[in-house]
Image 1 (cartoon, rainbow, N blue to C red):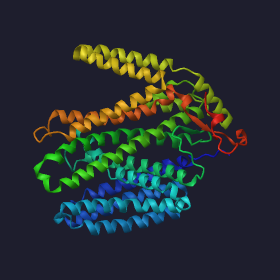
Image 2 (cartoon, rainbow, N blue to C red; image 1 turned 135 degrees about the vertical axis):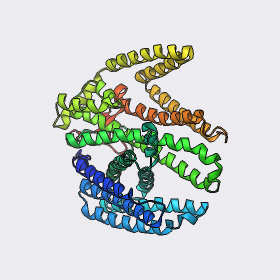
Image 3 (cartoon, helix red, strand yellow; image 1 turned 180 degrees about the horizontal axis):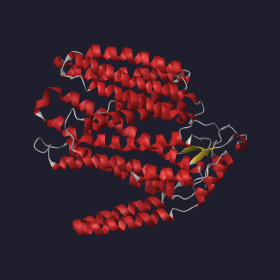
Image 4 (cartoon, one colour; image 1 turned 30 degrees about the vertical axis):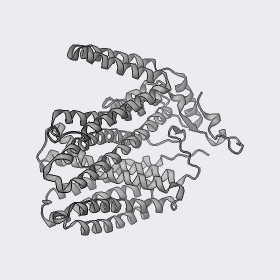
Length: 470
């Protein structure tokens, strides 16, 4: 029987509220203690633990596993104490010791999440252990992300460390990161608990019926997280040439490079995971509300208009209460056309073509024509998705290569800023390429059949063969 594996979203608003309150209290109190003295360092570790406590308390509420949540809080406190013990002499630490401290902090941050997974998932299975460890590692790196604050400071021209604006930014980053981590852990538990889990990234569950409020809050937070983490990727990439060449950090160069590479790898993986989750969430949402016009997912994907489009879809949609109704919505959607999306996109590209021709001449116009050609190839052929996706990955790699090969004289130049922006927008680009796949190629997706639709299968037969959209 098909089951709803998104019930945690019904309790997500309250859990996110807990994370927001704990983050605000912790960071406001922490701002009162200067980090330069020992008391400030101790306070920083305590308030860091307080933010984690809010995340575990929120997870306990979402998963309805209070015992596991409280146990994770207890272990998080112990891990914070251990990390503080190793870190309290950081002023006299060597570069090699800094690397050890960094790895210890990652491990200590992962252990409470691992305990939560064990207690709520019924143990660990060897065939899934590698996925669990990698996921927790990525979540830990994303939670410890501070470059998003720096990115927002650049955008808002805020450089005062003690300013109210910076404090608000830190609270926002902590709130979004903690809330996104709760969803990631909830999805990880779905993976751990499902014995017949099939590794299909385009698999839909038509039985998912989250509450409208919880689903909307999750969508808004995840869309915001996508921008925050792509911005932070740009900041990490921008700092890499400085770490490679600046003489004032020569003694700790290995540490900074290790930290930066780990952060970039982890946050890039987190961006892809957010895009994957959002894509399924948007697709299942339009099936739940019988929104057969393909323009809806395209609208949801837009940077800011997507928030408004989601609210409008709730007002205009007709909630489908049964799996058979949602299956019918899926068939109607698949038989439809993306003509409206292509017309609107074509107009946008035409306006960009005119503007670039005026500003940058023929070269700028050719760039727009190539971009439009790739986008329309994506809309027409499945291969276009892979071509566009890997070209954006290639753009990130080129930008990263430029950052790695920057000379000491150029590591603070405008070219490096442009390369960092290219890296950030490349990451955002391949995330949005993933998001819009259901707009043009819904037949690539499969769905889990309801219990009444399942027939007996022969051994070795594909469970989803009869349910693939053609």
